[in-house]
Image (cartoon, rainbow, N blue to C red; front, side, top):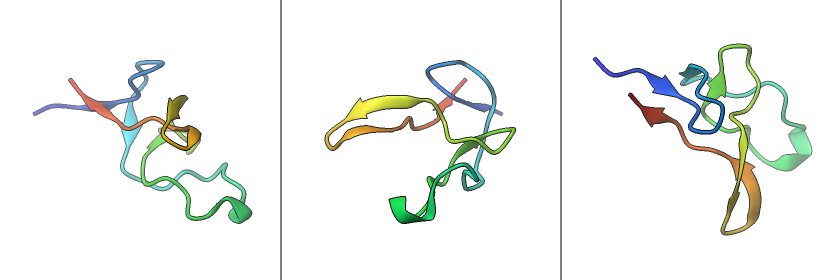
Length: 56
């Protein structure tokens, strides 16, 4: 079985909404670090956004 990790910091990721996102920023990302913080930021089509998990 593979495990989800944050591709930037390589820490474990969980399929649970991030709790450190301001409500005015739309819906929280579906994935977070184990402490509930959003996955590390990456540059996407619309600017900075949380990374998508990677499976190892």
